[in-house]
Image (cartoon, rainbow, N blue to C red):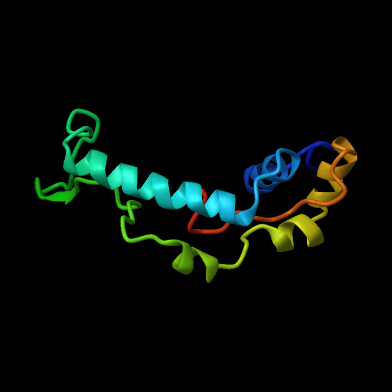
Length: 119
């Protein structure tokens, strides 16, 4: 079985947001700004020495850029996404583990979703 205090990454992110008062709007605004900065950095060539193209067995480039940059991300599009970790948190018992370990948190506020968490 899993260790008694195991909490998955996504629920841990929601726990941190809850403990430190980050709302869904706060997290979404950070994601929007992060996407804009990533796109600008890519356009400015800041990743040119960090991203190595991947080639197939025939030497054809199959990947040469970060596929997760979404510079058109906005608050409205993010608002339409459902939180990702409600079900595993509640039904999987991970919220209960988090609250037991952090009694100052009455309940975990699930603010992370596919548009504002790691890809």
